Length: 138
Image (cartoon, rainbow, N blue to C red; front, side):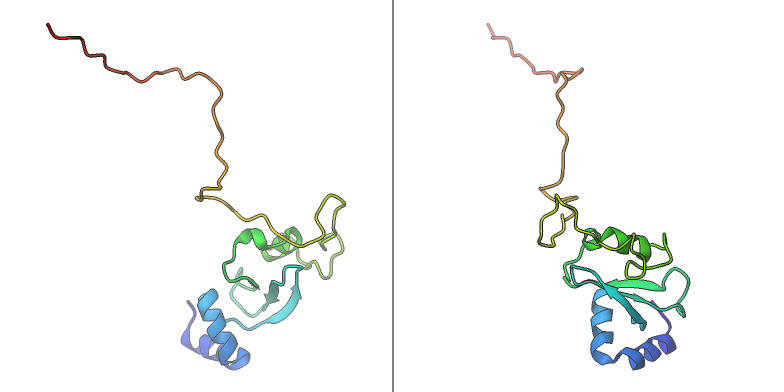
């Protein structure tokens, strides 16, 4: 959470509508310059006047967001691995590969859901469960 003067200054810069939107989805008000958008419609911002490591952020298009919805080039930029965003660096820019589908889609993260990957075991168990056998009474 930020200080009250900083929140009010950002409220003045971005307006009430965007400040309300930011408070609902990122829990803070931020004002910065739009660096670019990706093919999914996510918007990437930067403000170098912020605290260190809080200068870059993403506004997801879909509000049921997942980190898997960020393209690799933008992920490298937003995590401070590279200095130039994909809009300025041609190596980071998205280029469709021949085997990819033409429509833009992401593979969601299925962790902790029924669709999560679970490996199966093909070896025989070393320990067997004990099954009691009741003898007939006489």
